[in-house]
Amino acid sequence: EKKIAPPTLLLYVDRG
Image 1: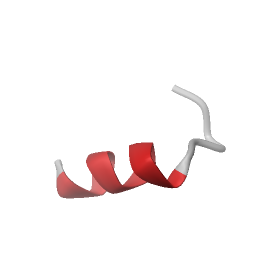
Image 2: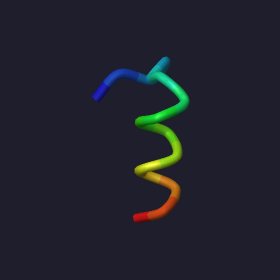
Image 3: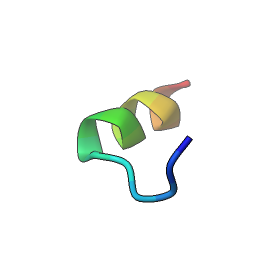
Image 4: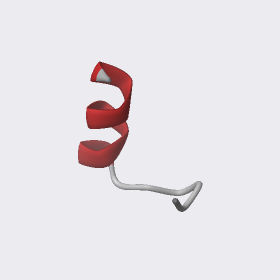
């Protein structure tokens, strides 16, 4: 997992 991930990935992780 990269710290600087794209917004799409970040949103996915945020949604859980």
